[in-house]
Image (cartoon, rainbow, N blue to C red):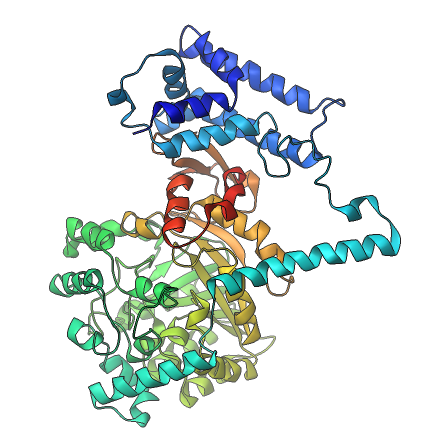
Length: 606
């Protein structure tokens, strides 16, 4: 529920809109008057006499375009919602508080920023938008003086990155104090499980000893009552869950104020929202969680195809530990059982499908985690694809580099080397490092061995509530590059209901790319920000022409219309996505100890 004070703040941000709405007899009049007003605003900023700074003018045009979208009849029809009707009622009717229950502060904050944005009062560059005193000194200089002044300005940008690292104490697992803590954890785990150093280096031992019981896990790390409850609920209801001994050793025994291992814990220990959604559907109906509609893009068992030249094959449907944010959680089995293993008949048919489709030049072997298969099975698959002449690239999607790096034993490395043939067929490793705290000596040493074979390693990060703070992803990029991993994709979290606790607004991802990633050297910021559209595939978020905001809902959610990659080629359907409200997101960040002011420009990323 909102207050009259908040409503007054809304209309005080642009009194002209209040007068316009009050003088409109009905919603249609309000729409006509608003479009006329927006056209007038646009005409004024295009005038040669407009005093606003050029960058403020650009923001005004963007805000006007968004405003026109959200008050259009077409958008109202698509979303079955009318934010214009809400604004008109707020301006013209003496509403009781009971009538405001469905309207949120998150909605009003979005509108306040739009109201200000269309008249050049975003506050991004200056209070007035004119920028008389805010322009950097180097802009009005030339020669060496300009270069020195600009260099000083650029130093401040680097310092901004370094200050956030220091403030939040971002760390990798290569820090000496972290290495020592994890050495102690490893010792405790081996004692608890009766293992040896030789066992620790054997990936089969880690698979055999995956930890699921609260009483075992809490012998190594402290668990909150909430974490205990969620683990027990998962186990009691056979929801896939487990932690490898190696990955458990990466977590901190005791939680500190900074919660360095928060990302690690939350990405593997299921939360209540996740469990409630799964159990509501029933564990026997996990297919209802197929957000990407993979069944609609599977021309053959084990295969998914959404693009012209590459297709996915999934020979195994289990992982040693399940990531809570996983796209394919609905397909995964609860343990390393016979049900998870591939059917030789199905796999043979899948390989035949690739053999008979010469237009497909690349295969992504994923799952589940395909490297849970033994070396003999992996060689069988690689050999089969290597014998298909038109397959030029083989990708292997695996998180074992993070959860169990000892999987890359000498035998597996020899197999990879055998089928990686430069200019004939290359192999690449695709992994998911979510946080710099997951980077370890073990991982770095394995990646060095892989790179010495000439095989590239790429990272696909999923942007979640647990790794989205200022410069947190830039810190990850820099440290991944230092050990030989190239950032490849930065995924907006899938819009799956069970992972709603992890959702980050699209605007935050765009802000990260512009204000944080852009500071890094080009060889480090090689990842592309993408949104995965069900059945259609990836949408590049940096491309304004590939998405539009078409509505602001009562709860403050932005509704995006995403356009498929086939745009300009084929009339394929678009996709509507309801995002996480920015206001709610900022409050969550505040609860984590962040200052929302550090993110204030987020409202103007569309």
